[in-house]
Length: 321
Image 1 (cartoon, rainbow, N blue to C red):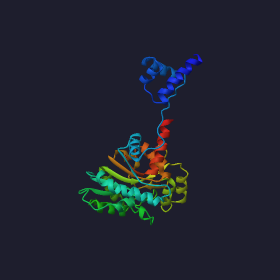
Image 2: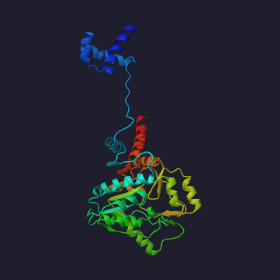
Image 3: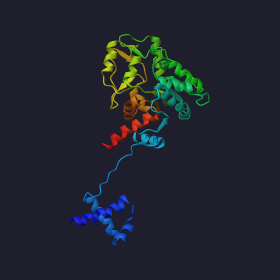
Image 4: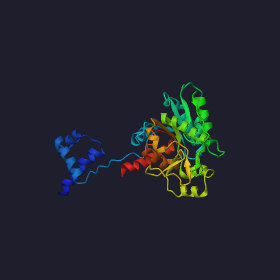
């Protein structure tokens, strides 16, 4: 094509794409038909004068971000709580917990058996709930055994009790340790308690739990198991933890420890629970949150705005590949 023809195509394309003129306006100014303008714009693309680039925006407002994440992570809902650069993790967890205390009573309405896990955000959520007759006739049950740690965030029965008290629900406690040495069998009483807990798990229609990174989870693991088992876990390459069970970046579960058994609701059975609500925030958890979403471990996510934006970057990168 002659240089003069290329110049004409460039001029037409510039008016349409850069100056925002309509094809009708261009046809009048150039004294050519509208159909000629259309053909010339197509030729401008063919000749590489016009290049189409489709991309996702660098940032979204919170409402758009909630919609984007829920759709692309195949979730029922995403709720974003406020966070700002420089906030300590405890303030971020408080923000998520406050949002959970507002939204979850309505999300849990009509649930009959609600399982709950441990963790700092879940603990704060249970503490921030306000008394209301939300779940009459329902029962709150632990999703995991008790920890020997003095941390209040790992006291599963206390979390169950607070949540049940504020939601006016019944409660069920456990005395089973979260980790049990496989060489030590359960007593008859412990076996009965475990069977009773599993009966509730079979009927569970909602679950509320936190999510952790492997480094943070090992702080609790430190007090429960041997140095060998802890080192094996640290070197496993696991991406995250839910209910003291560990999973890789592709969502597959880390096989149980050779020496210990975990007394917790099996994470691979979580997909069968109708409402699966995860409370998790902190930019350092973004990859773990994403992996758990892809694995289908939760259907509702409550997180903070900084973490949500990091999740957006990760999902955006997946889409743009």
